[in-house]
Amino acid sequence: MKQFELNLKKLLSTYNCKLISYQYFKKIFGNIVLKIRCIENELNFVTDRGEIFCNGVLLCTYEYIKKENKTTPQKLLEQIELKLVEIQKNNK
Image (cartoon, rainbow, N blue to C red; front, side, top):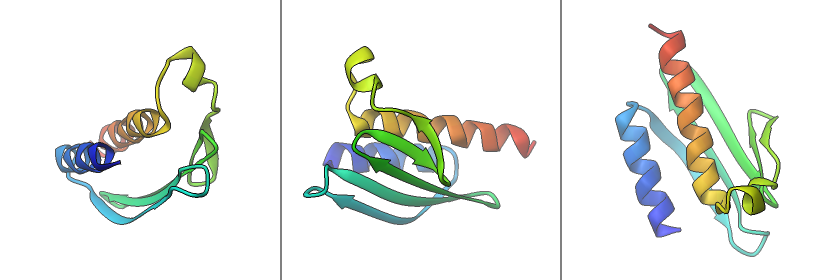
């Protein structure tokens, strides 16, 4: 998780966003809950048994684990970046 945290900080710095809160629940299926502020947008990401949600909307099911051979933290970073890129484009 240390690598995830470092990569998250770099990603947020790249898009000039701020981490509001971050929780990792190792004993609860390794779930992650984090809140990001980017421009005027607040994004609430939650992972639950491999599924990834943003602001209550399912972004991807756990199928990526087998299909793409990615871990949940890897896929979460990918999904976060997609959202940040979308926000940047919408605010130009």
